[in-house]
Image (tube, rainbow, N blue to C red; front, side, top):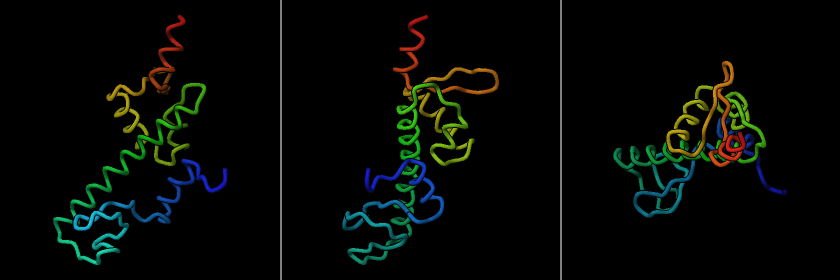
Length: 134
């Protein structure tokens, strides 16, 4: 596919700073902007409260994005994936991946089994399909 970035490339570009920040709606004009303390469209300087709100929205979006990328990665896998495999595919640390995997598990979107020292992760429907046979 032309113009399509992989999950890993997108995450890597965030880490390297090519996407400095995710676009968030301006608190005043509602147009999406990547600026940190003002809107690039209405040119309004934001107050400290507005900057705090925008930064909170960005953090929530980033967290949701990592969860989405993990779900997309697990969807593409035919077999269960370890925390390390997931972290490498999404481009985050093992610890960050583990936190997001457990959050997704708490939301009922994925399941895991402990195999030796590793957690192996499945989407719920793949897990049920695999273990309903036995």
